[in-house]
Image 1 (cartoon, rainbow, N blue to C red):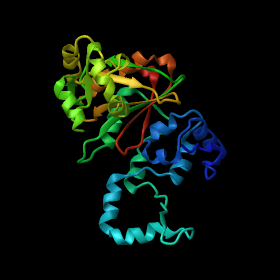
Image 2: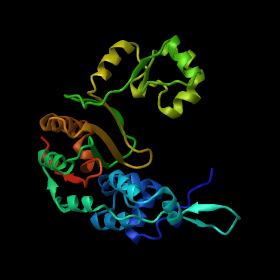
Image 3: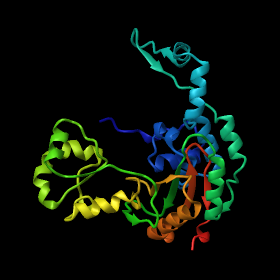
Length: 297
């Protein structure tokens, strides 16, 4: 496997921004998929750095892309984004032209103050206002922590509305795996089942489905555990492997604001405010708002 030469990356960005991204081990191809809050939660990055990063690595906006697709045929887009490499005859490479933020996003950005610390309830109401759309928007909480390697599980007071298909290990599970028809999101098993499951480690492991006591899916009473998870109020969390960043999906923004605020409050307290440098709230394709941690009691 080829190693990444980090010193050669981000030469198109200001020195501070480039160093912060290199230190955080964030690869360029990941930036378009990251929300503003995720980027701002990286140590050493501020609003000015975010602006320069977005100029070179804009976020993919699904709504704008669909509009662009209607105006430009597939053939015309291929002509605009491909060119001959000149190295091998007939070989072509895709050249992606950085796309500026949409007019809608710029309009929404003006309704937020990047320097302001928003009380939690105010941040939620603002995100609800910004995310008005026919499409369902997902609420995301991004935390910049003092240390990495944190993981655990939180029992929330209210359901996030997120449903997962739960499978309790049985002979039918083996049939599904052998047929490559894995139709479940969580696999629960007992320690006694592990000898049978061990041979499927290469299949289940990469998908994050291999039962493990640390993940709470290798237990003595899977039936009881299935009931807990089916309610949708059990949230597992884990920081990024090499960086102290935590990203949590909290369900749709259309939830009751008070219930969503209570869930976030429980999360902040569980992770421990002392370990949190900054917290950002955002929804799908909207600017982020920085939460005033002192407002959480």
